[in-house]
Image 1 (tube, rainbow, N blue to C red):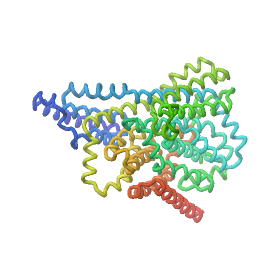
Image 2: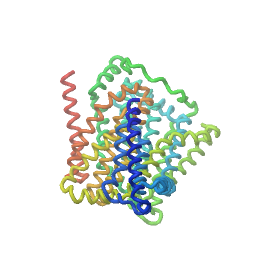
Image 3: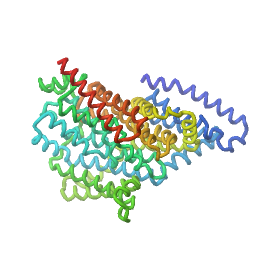
Image 4: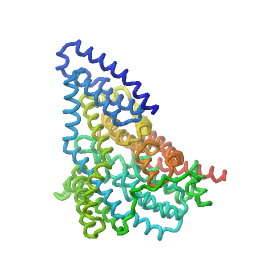
Length: 537
């Protein structure tokens, strides 16, 4: 409420500023309205992105912040002409973005993915896998590693991950006396951090959509070794599971669970979701087969779009593939196969299959909205020549300062994503600007783009208003405040190691050197923490 009041208090100032600038523009004559934008390739071309970032930090509302940034871009492009602003925002912005073939393919993939998630949950495969795992996993370390393994396996989408891993692994973690706070952390840490380094995922599709000329997936793959936060988070989870190390407030929760059997440390658990009704017909194969088919079909679709079946090599076809076409075709094939399989198995009636279509669409509406606004904001800044201005400015005056840009971009992305609770909105704001500084062929440009992705995931991982953080709490049936407070020290440890790794990578942009340095920093910090915890205990 306080943030809403602060945002509303800014509206009169914005309206007054808008009226003044509009009056000045009209006073200069009608000829200016017809002239090309006088703000093109100037400092003002950055204003839409600056406004979007500033409002997002103040209001913590990504949708309205992106729209106000879009409005500012339309006003500047049209020289404050009312008609020109409307035309540019809607015709050249929203309509052009939503009529672009690549963007439409991404949206179709998201909708189909949402439908598949609903179908898999209704089939009861998740509950069946949980029952199977409870019989075969005997140790706490084995239970934690199995949670991590399932989270890594479900890498196509973070929503799918959070909604599935919690319901599947709760019986396993409870039997092994793993606190619900630790389960929530493992769920959250294998959602976005895994999706951001998986080429076959909704996140890869979203990031690829911000890169022109169909080179998005190629850039995404090149950036994977530099995504230090995601890689270090996965490495840290494995280290914690194998060494039984816990620190911060998580240590108290794990001790209570291990020694007293108190999984919640006195904090009342969330009530079970009303819609979590186990399907008695569900089997493990009902979860595994659709997931494997989806992965295989999407990989086949991408190499198909890259010319693999026309003679190109696998690596070449994958790097030259069109993520929009590949993911769209692959997910469509996977959906058809999944529906046929469920009908043959008679695990879901056709009526429920049909009802899953609108449910899956609704589950992806937030992602679709963010993408639409981000694409339109990108169109506004492109029309004002922001990329050219930033490129000339940085290359002409930054000099050796460029080596610090990866670490700076990482910090900015962390702050923006933490404040807004969304990674995708951060991608839409920062990646186009980052690509305006460096060409796709520049090694430092790849590092900066990866720093943007890593920072966005880190901020999203820590943010209490993040949808994935909230869903991880719900999936583990853990108190949300408990999950955020126990997870924060772990996330900050990985973030600190990532920041120093990006400082190093800014001067040595070589993944074969920078990634081992990042891992050494993380492992060294964990051993130090282990020594401190052991000494205290």
